[in-house]
Amino acid sequence: MSFRVMKDAAIYGLVGAVAVLVAPGVGRAATTFNVNAGWDLFQTDPTGTTFPGLGNLTGVSLGTFNFSGTQNGNNPLGRNIGVQNVGATDTIVERTAAAIPLPPLVAGASATIPLTMVALQLQTVTPMNFMGLGLDNYFITLDPSLNSTGSMTITWNGDGLSGSFSSVINVNFDIHKGSLAGTVVNPGGTILPLTSTGTLWSDLPPPGAIQLTNVNTFLSGTSGDRTQDFWINNGAIVNPGPNPVIEQHPNGAVHRAFETGSGPFIPEPASIVMLGIGTLGVGAAAWRSRKRAA
Image 1 (tube, rainbow, N blue to C red):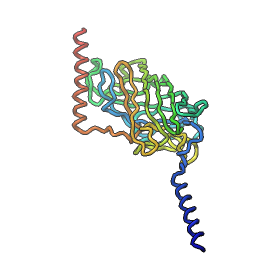
Image 2: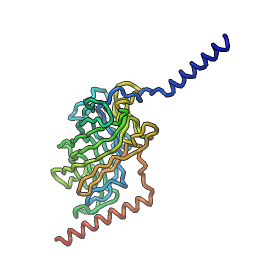
Image 3: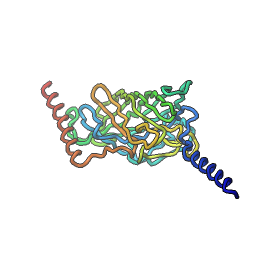
């Protein structure tokens, strides 16, 4: 083989190698702007989640969840998912339809889809004397007699694989005294609209997040293809990191959560003590206010 032939072969090989390295891999090439239906698994941040009269709230792990029994008993994805281990997840929101924007598919394209909160388990960080009902731990769960529904508007960046979103969910919840199955202290339940604005997302999971095929990853139906996935993070194409969703209500209620396993929010013991002091102060102030009113 001549020197020139060898030289040409080496050049072509180098060009081919570079092409492979720079070409988008599976899950990084968006041929259409699309986010498929699925579930978002959240872990509540106790340092940023609060409810009037209850102080700071922390999550209570669900442990497992039956994804085939959501949306009024039907699985909208047509997938045999069943019961899955969801680890420290305490909140699950289901996107019950695919988000497909109308053309032109450019930066700023958007689509609005329905949401349903299908699981929620929170508890007070420290015992509280809620509404004068006695010093105890109080727990928040979804009202089983009412659906907690809302909507999400997803906006895409020009890459078709990231962007931002805003949402509103009308959370119908019960407050239990003493345990998750304890006496409901708000008979008839309570509805609380929670809104979020401008939260960043991309099709890549943040580091540490729990990934369940057909639940929150590989929603395109093809293993390794993330182009239809939806993860809350910093929206970066390279090395996406954790980013919280913050849902709030004008009365001061705030729910701050990360994709399960990705949040840097586990407080140090000293921080837990400070949280406890703060929540007890809120409870005491509320009690004194009611006493003066009486």
